[in-house]
Length: 315
Image (cartoon, rainbow, N blue to C red; front, top):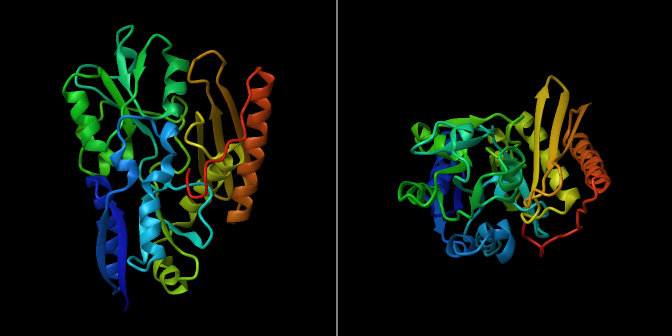
């Protein structure tokens, strides 16, 4: 038995995720407490993440708490975890994935096809912007920031005809009834790590890593390792309209990746690859190979993928 403190953001979804991990660790005999924190990413709501420092804004304060010994582990939505962690930190555990798909949420329309021409759709993701424009270039896509409850409130207040959210968050909070339709990956490819929880620790904390081992889900970890390798090789930035999603069938890991143009000028570039994978190194190698093919495809269509890495510890 050990005493463990979990650092977490204070949004309702983040607290649900931390409470979920807390309950699992307590079942294993550990004593667990929560350290709720407000991150810079939670405070800046008037600008897109790509303009203010990236998704790493959601984890930096939690990493400081780990570094100062105020917390032993931090629970993240894996899609918010930087592709390159700061020195001395590691991803100690990836848990079994929830629904990785995107959800169509609207109070008036049943699905994307039902939206009238010029309808206003809210999303904070350049990936979603690019994929939506590839299917419905007539839509007016507007920025949407804030936690899950804030985004739903903005929809209910009439600012948007529909919004697109991660299905996993809605399901975890018991809000499945708000989902009017889900996008299959063939329609809208998810972002790397979407639907999975990742747990970050200090690399030197072997005791905490050992305590988390029973919570890890190896098949999910292999899939998201390939997805994150695509993102890392492409620059690892939330300012890039990139999607990556992997599935396992036995030992066969299949990964789909897509790069889109948020302005809708260039055609969507899609790549698929399959290989036998049994460890994280193999999954990472497959993802890196897919990124190379994706970059070549973008170049062939006359586009360019800038090698852009944000500061250490950001996405």
